[in-house]
Image (cartoon, rainbow, N blue to C red; front, top):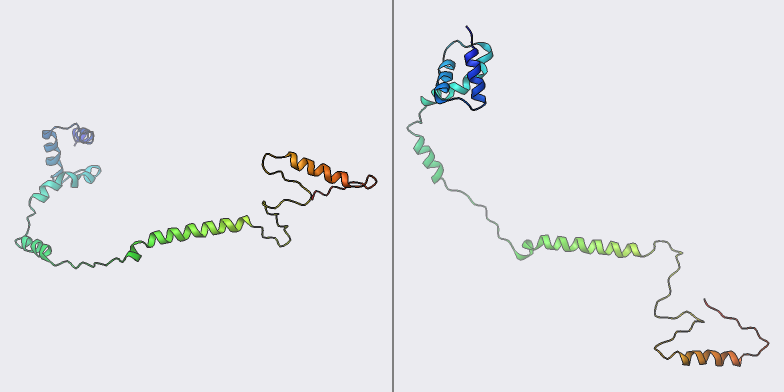
Length: 160
């Protein structure tokens, strides 16, 4: 027997192009006892409605559903203390503190022989610092100290 028409209907069914009458033809075909082996995988799809029409709910179905609905539900409620509620914030603050501490530690040298830098508020010896806009006083002080040195002694400037 040639199943070309059934194959065409199946192809149209997969493309969603069949009418209701054509789908009835497919259901009638697949409800037969003998079907070719290459079409057997499609049988459950078309026979499902006919098989499920005969399935009915039992008389005690309503009682079972009502018993499940009326069954008391045990709720495990926990009381949350403010400490427990803020625990995620505490953890985040601890992580920030750890990161900042490690960042500060990385700025310090780890070598023992590393020379310490002079504080920025102290001037190095031998240098002059002019404070304010009155620089003429500083210049006159330098000139007066140079005049007091004997002419034969060399001038040594120590700028360390």
